[in-house]
Image (cartoon, rainbow, N blue to C red; front, side, top):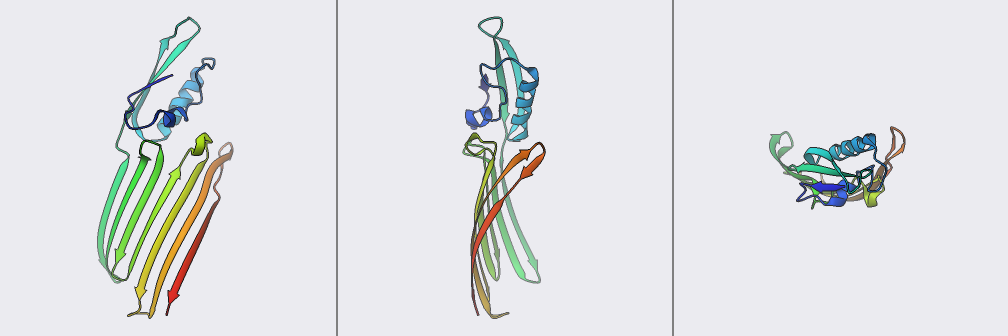
Length: 183
């Protein structure tokens, strides 16, 4: 199995989605399922393959050619409402450092509060076909002039997602939050 066209994404990210492996008996069904798994990651704009003759008649060479695409997003926003002005900024990356990990960050500012978070999601943690999700968020709200309190919150979450049975997914998650309120 030869992979061409990836300059950013690590080979192991692509190979981990392969159902067929080197040395396996040839099956066009498994090759097509493998190509569909690679496409399902949605980090490539084009995924094609060619079957080439191997060193002997009973061997084949599978050449997968991919075309990488931009996988990041930047968002910025501003608004005015009954609670005052607000500004928001977020960055999402679906192939962080070429490892296939999804990274999401956000920052929200209003006249009375500030909040931010960072989330990491590894959709194939240690090649187990199980995702590992972690996150951290903080916020601080000062409404001492209007409601008479200040609040600060810090939280952490950890979760996973995997297919228990065919088309039946299990997604447990635990979140721990500490909140301090001053009156």
